[in-house]
Amino acid sequence: MTRFIVLFVALLAASSVWAQTTAFVNVNVVPMSSETVIKQQTVVVSGGVITALGPVDEVPIPKGAKVIDGTDRFLMPGLAEMHAHVPAATSDELDRNFSLYVANGVTTIRGMLGQPSHIGLREDLNNGSVFGPRLVTSGPSFNGRSVAGAIQARQMVRDQHRAGYDFVKIHPGLTAEEFEALAETANELGMPFAGHVPVAVGVARALQVGMATIDHLDGYFAALLPVGSDGFGGYGGFFDVMLAAELDPERIPEIARATAAAGTWNVPTEVLVEVRINTTPTAELRSQPGMRYMPKTTVERWVASKEALFAERDFNPEVAALAIELRHRLLLELHKAGAGLLLGSDSPQVFSVPGFSLHQELDALVAAGLTPYEALRTGTVAVAEFLNSNAGTVAVDRDADLVLVNANPLENVRHAHRIHGVMLRGLWYSVETLAERLARYADHEN
Image (cartoon, rainbow, N blue to C red):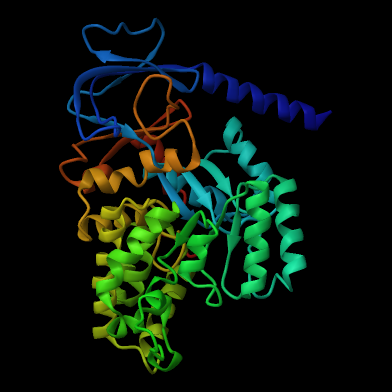
């Protein structure tokens, strides 16, 4: 009986969220469907969707609606973290991570290392019984330790499809035969597969068989090596960055066009790579704003990881700098070719604090040559297209996953981090409310 009472209370709470009506009044709308700002609008939200949008003098405020003053502020779609790592549904880390995501305007995450508890967690997030962003989840990863042969690869895909996971995650170590079996079975079932490109397969073949996303730009540097190259004696380093001096950059446009033609998207996680291999002192990284919300033991582990990479015998900071330059060029060429880019930072990972790192990723995309609008599209409109979801733009009948910011993000992408409040599935969280959630995790040892 207790179980049913708890369920009833959860459903009642969720229904009250969906029933709430909110009006953003005199707000500047950044619809993201085009590079424009629609000034002095009223946006009405009810039942978790946008029900009205128009000039402030023409759209009435519904009786009893919660009114949010949007004067001199900008309303944009919520962002998506398309490469997140989600702990178990019972983990003490879960609320910390989810609070960090939402406080930074992240309303959707794609979990890239799934587990059985994430199936129920996905539903709990959707119905509002657990606080946090919407969750798209893989199953447990396919890798050199979890898969032993093509037959098992096929069965694992079928099992994960039957269990209800959204996609298959690929980690390193698969043989070519295992990858082919996985791809064929996933394509038969209409189940996307995404993640790393196995060394035994290569980018060209991954594109041919319809890989949904390639994450980290994995495999592209190896694909850009001249024919007959020994690949720096076999040492590529972190995502092959030490191959940078051997690459043929003139082939970048060619592989970008091939990616676009294949319909494969990329989640670059550029900030993850750059923070690991650039020369930013660990003391500076340790003092970044988001670090105070992570356990000190975690931050020290991240410091040790970066220092260990720099201590590797064949690591060369000058080649690493070239690798960053070439990754930027590859990113820009992928964009110019029309290959889809999706926003993701691999959080929480080394110096990638949930939510905070996604705004650093936006900075990295702009540094690579994208405009603020183009960079923001990778976390809004592009995500909605990729997931076939109802979010991603500010428009009538769209899901009310929204962020109210204090300055125009199309002028400077960093303005997307000047958050006044977040609307998650139609429920408004002010910046003060979000700060209270984060205060529970500030400056803790563990």
